[in-house]
Image (cartoon, rainbow, N blue to C red):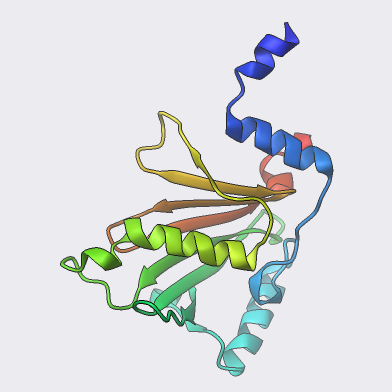
Length: 178
């Protein structure tokens, strides 16, 4: 009976369980940010990065902005902001990617093309497993996931311009699997 139940699990469910079972932890994020940083530590680290000229304030003071230089096409703006739990501890990052030269009439700069560039960038920042496509009737657009131990990265287009990325600590998302 158990084998029959396991065969009904999605690739996503199997991957989450396998990766969490390894006990491998990936807490260090880009820019020396970490899962578990307090909101105050997040702001302090961003302040230092800003003083060094590595990042700037993002639009509407809602994101931190980092400019990715891209040799083959337009530069890319990478926006990010911490996701915090009730104790003000960072459990993830909310991110967006967009080409700086985007316009509705430039097909090569649309988000469906940028999504794969963003995934390559994320793989270079967070090595390990590859992204895989997730299918679910609740998802109305192509969605890709990368899971390494406790770290999950979800990528999908948000608009014609923006690629939405959520990086999460699975120990927070699925506490029973710790």
